[in-house]
Every structure is written in structure tokens, then in C-alpha cells.
Amino acid sequence: MIQALEDKVQSIQKAAYLLLRKKKEPKIIQALQGLNYWSWMECLTTLNYPAYVSYLPITSDGKKIMFGGIKAIQIWEWEEDRMQRLILQGHSDEINFFDFSSDRQTIIGGSWGDKRIKVWNWQH
Image: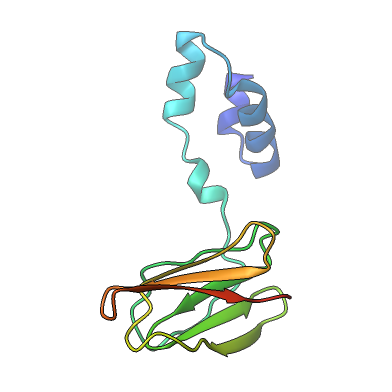
């Protein structure tokens, strides 16, 4: 099974990894440490954004990603490549931290500049 980790076929490598990853034998642990499983990832899509991005909360269903800055939060429905620009009233400066509630009905945002935390109703 350890040899399957070095197979040229990626699906065989993945299957071997899934079968071996919880094993405690030293030989297996050593083989897994040498495995570059990050190479199995593929970029699904890219969004160009004109400013720095420091925080990207994502909904629990994985369909919406939130990002923002000065007085606005944007929601990217990345699978559909659709953008919603939300102008959230109340902050007078950059919104530094924000997140969805677990039920996706509320957005909370905080600003260092205006020293406020705001909560918005957002039912989508």
C-alpha cells in the first residue's frame, strides 16, 4: 500500500493516502510525511481584486465568500461567478472584520477606525 503513494496515477495516490493516513506504524508515518498531497489541489476559479485581501469568510455551504473594505462588503457567489455589492450603513471607516452567522441570516462587521461593531440582517 505504501508503494501506491508513489504511483503515477493521482487517484491511486489519493486512495492510498485515505487508507493510510490514520495508521500509526512508523514506516507509514514516514511515507506520509514525504507525500506532497498539496499538489493534488486545483484552482477552481480566480477573482481579480484591486486592493489587498486580508480576510475571507465563507458561508457554511461553501457557496459565498465575503470580502470588503471602505464602508462596503461584497459577496462573491464563486460557483456562478456572480458578485453582490452590499453597502452596509453604519460604519464610517474601513470594515476590518466581518462574518456570516451560522444560519446565513446575519452579517457582523467591525471597524478599527470608527471603533464600532455592527450587525446587519441579511436574508439570502
